[in-house]
Image (tube, rainbow, N blue to C red; front, side, top):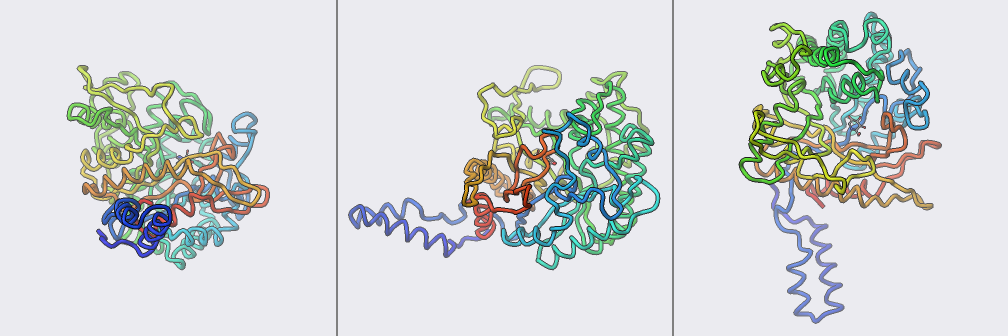
Length: 489
Ligand code: NOJ
């Protein structure tokens, strides 16, 4: 931990003192200047090697949808199907990062970011999902990683951020088939062999529940299906199996120092009251509410309570599947946005979920309830329940109206409020010793927000989609200050 008060902070407090002395008596001013505005040693200061960065995903930022041999993904099909996305917008061009990646690396550098999380488009590498790899696809990610490294930014790559090759959906039914899991393993092994000389951290999957539950149960995301429970549970199983097969294939093909994890938006349980019975209840809830994804990955077993609750709809699996699914990981990535409030209850599961009242505050996306403490509890629960040695916050951030002023500014004070409060709670987790090593803010720049398309902005940089010009929002200046001070500001 650093104890020093930064020069800039010191200068600011002198400035505050000077202003005060102009309007009050000198004695009273100097007394107040000591009490107000003087940075406290260790005040929300992060450990010296804590890593700050930003995250994005291929389909949301790259564009270049038909270039250099890329095959279509289920998101191309979905977004081109009328009525599926906001105003039928697509990711055909998005932020055009495929062509502008050098410029975007400079945006990261200006922030002082040390890490960047991007995802790889499977159908750029295997346009048909399997078979012969397309070299021009992998070359793009090699160029991007080299550019990041040349600018002192460590690349972290996600293998699957929802853009399944359409060919696999058509041929075998996508995640409904074990063949997709096998194909994912092969893809992961290939990427590891071509990229692990320059990318040392990989995430297999991003957010199981988003691409399975929203894509195969609710139909709000690609491929837009509404499966009955038994088929849905099997798709869930195939997805965790794919994760495990990918871990194994990467271990077999990557350079020795490669670290592997995943990025999961677990249901993050927060005790309604920070007192023992509720804390224990939220701990139990974390295991149970994540039984179909994170719990089976971390424990190599579906919880009896889960199998019992699913009854005849439970997934079919073998003991060998469970071994693969629980292949050891080097770290865990957690995407954390909104809390799930839990209370202790005198019931078989020992907890109940407390639904948010209608007055609960949220950001522009109406699902994004504001509960900063979830960053603390999410980190604490995964560290305590599964003894995770290394955690990254792989996503956290929010949407805002982000109005651009005529002179090119965005005063997104709501985003700054959101981030300041969440990161303060992250500080609590770190200072209590939970092993969080880094934080990726979602997102570097506004991008294609899936079904909400361009109607929801999450970036630190505002993107004018007509001109592709990027403007730093006020939150970008704020994050830059946070990174340079390594403290909440
Ligand atoms: C999680 C997803 O991984 C990301 O793609 C999405 O844009 C953000 N949440 C915001 O909804």
